[in-house]
Length: 567
Image (cartoon, rainbow, N blue to C red; front, top):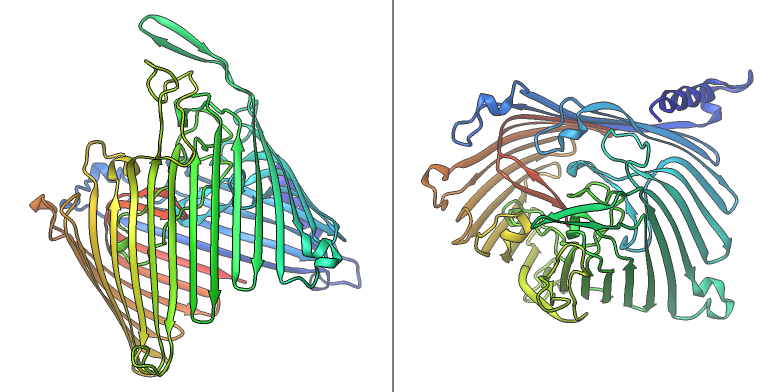
């Protein structure tokens, strides 16, 4: 496959440059692209425990990519070059290197679209298939193969695909990971049936089927001098059905997924089938919105290599039922989805107190409430004397609606946003979190974390282009690293300049030597679609999560530069 990459790129550029005498390159189509460079220079820091030996001579690390896409009518083609020389601390070391891991060609002919090469795709909510890229996490499970999208009739959308997933720089060969095949269909009933075209009720139905073929070897396990041989399935199938009902401001969404038994390193090689359910009901009108969501996941890790652990080679995705936290102290304890089993719900309310009322003020006041609670599913032994999750067994029995132990995560957020004048606005937040650090971060034996977080975010505009923003945050907990306080000042000269200083102080750490300041100063400049930023400071250790998928971030001290642009 590596040999095909330069051939593909050469052929692409020959195509771009090969024009008729009366045509120019511009006449044939257009080229767009983007790139980003992230570099970090690391320094020793005795208080953080970062030594010369830890740095291992790799004082400067960088991640970077460049996308080039050519479009000509119904034809698109492109590639992405990536470099990790070496990868920034916290990214998987397997990324080290550079090359072209992503390239594609795509053609749209009337109601058929054909893609060959790499692509990203999602069926429904992703419960059986989601392929995507998240640069900040170092996550990319793109599929290399072929995909066809077909609309045979108004309101009917079909997708089919086959390929292998990206695994860092490792090429696919000799069945070293599975071949993923999938089909998805979606039906917009109001478009299909003319009699429903004017109906106030909108109905959308969908279904998916995914299969992973992996050339697996039987697993051998030795216990008490007895050798056990386990036959592992080569084909693991999963399917899902979904629906969406819309009536005025009401909307109901639900998707159910089922997976054939898939013994793997993620579930201790048990033979239990997997299933998941995601449901949401919401209502919204001007100034008010409410939503209720529920989710149950049971043994739904689905990878294209049965021996893989961690986040790589995930075929599917399980959306989190938690509110994404944008403030730093509220994000210290983020939730990571537990694919082997979780059950939970979320409730959200948004309300705007009307303008020119006593409580709303001149511009109105926005209130947002969020509550999430997530537990383990109830797991019972399949038979007396067989421990739950025993290798080579059905693993466990579980009542679908039963809540198990322990609790994984709980959060309550309240956010008040108010504009007092054309110059001044304020956001106040309170966050309560219960965090199972044992399960989520693997800190065995550590107690549950109970945290209270208060946040004040104030912005004052001196002129239409100059503004000063201040954040003050406090986190109080008797567990883990104790109490924190954080302060930030950000001065903006719109639309080009940004200057920021902040400090996170872990003054309540039970270890006196770790009651440290995590200070930082940064500046950024924007010119059109280009942006450059430079910062210096400390980085605290923790988890970085996006959509329930996380990576560990190590403590660091040094300079960071980021350059991005698009054209």
